Image (spheres, rainbow, N blue to C red):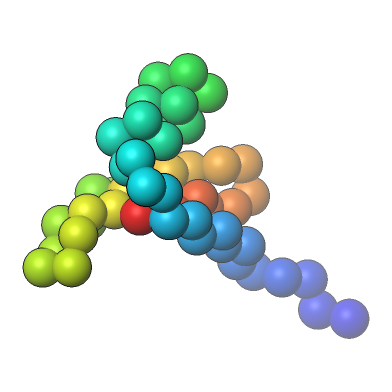
Length: 55
C-alpha cells in the first residue's frame, strides 16, 4: 500500500473572519496562502502533515 502524499481538509463558514481568528490566532496555525476571488475569500493554513482550507 502506498502512503498518502497529501491530506487536505476544506471547510466553509458563515463567519469567515471568526473562523480565521480561531484557527490562526488561537490555535497558531501558519498561513500558507490567502485567496481572494470573485466568489469570496479563503485561506490555506499549515497543519502538521496536512493543510486546512477555510472559506
